[in-house]
Length: 493
Image (cartoon, rainbow, N blue to C red; front, top):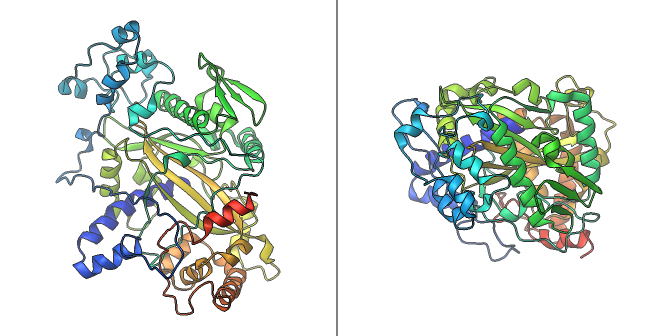
């Protein structure tokens, strides 16, 4: 579920921009209003909007030769980093000279380990092996990527924390992807299920092994870099719970009461022990320019797993998707090749589930629920599943990382959320058939639709929403009016 969604995410960027540019002025105004960039309806309550990111279309090309296409390099940030280095570190770094021709001739091999490679070789991100080694462990990734570190969340209490109530619903459902700039404080969001989820994920790894966690040769730098960026984030965002030792060799986790010796395990296993989040990384093949799934820790996939997708190119992963090769492959490959490290993005996908299936490999017994409508199914068993997702490039390795976390909300929670029942009803009843088939909500709709109709009637009767409200994506999507008040109250604030 996670990697295919990443592809739909990036394809939506390309196709949505092309479609928008082809519209006339009045049509563009309509689209902008749906994105919350037009005039706000003053009759409705509002909350602060997320900043909408202007996403540049990848450079067009008359050929499909991706071998000569590289992501924007962040090596210009080395001058800032060097200002804080000791004389010995500066000497190890070298003079920062860069020869583009030498760079193109000296790329690391696809399966080559940077740790044993010649110092004169380069990662496709533009950094030399010498520079990467000189930076050492836990360099200043915020400066390298130009993505700020999060603000400390000192009032955060893990025992009562709830995830923010993401409601990534949109209408017209087939036209927009509702992409926003990453809220850097919320790249990784912890909540009260933390201990349970960590335990579940470790059990899944013990049972399924490489079906949920796997890394291939050549991904060593990307795995180390991701692990270090994640730990830096956790220690900055939740300093009351996570502490790196002064020499950065150990991580103290005060929630679990554990200490992880960082060099004793593979970086992804350090993350498995401490972070209830899924990560998938694609790396550039220097022989072809294509991006290939080379490492991942994914414990929340439905209908697939790491083992079935590892080492596939983007178009191979999505070969079953209709029209992918004809309509999306070129744009997708170009987007991944040009995505900058300084512009991470976020979005959400959603589904309706019976109970709370976290991991469902092919053939899992829980799949049987999707084959029929159970007349005895109780409303209390239906949950909204939201996978809140981010996509970003790591500055040193150049890997593109997709991460997401599965969040479950009981259907009943939607009852008092203004406009949400009406919006979901519209999608379920009138959404494009092929999209709804892919979303696979049919097995719950005989229970969900009557419930949402009931919630909608109540909201109209209580004056929460207008009777003649024209269904559309909410101005503050993925939020609903009053979400902060509800969220704070549920946590006891």
